[in-house]
Length: 110
Ligand code: AMP
Image 1 (cartoon, rainbow, N blue to C red):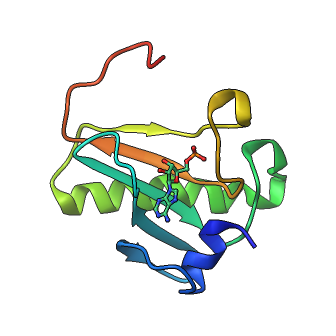
Image 2: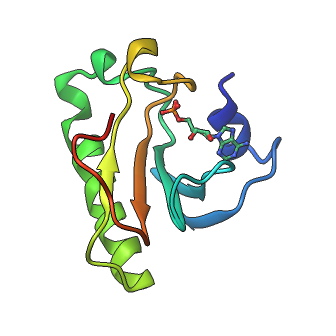
């Protein structure tokens, strides 16, 4: 069971911003910006590399959830990031979209 599955199952506590039948949005425990959310599908897909055509709607919904949550929080400017694989600093192998806001960002991200 991944860390995020344990959070979804309430075996590990988390600061939950939003939840519905398909997604949970939590505050990152080690925030890299004043707002740092993780949009997590409840279906345990390890990485972007593991997506299939059957996941198109689920992944599209991650962005819709992100935009709704951020609108509700009053943010129109934010960064949305997937880390895919260890070389890109993915550490939890359960698909998640990082949403960061509340500071000025640099590009390229490094
Ligand atoms: P990644 O490195 O892209 O796989 O992102 C995993 C994220 O999960 C990191 O930003 C961690 O800070 C975050 N994280 C790890 N443990 C927890 C936890 N218990 N609750 C919330 N976020 C966590």
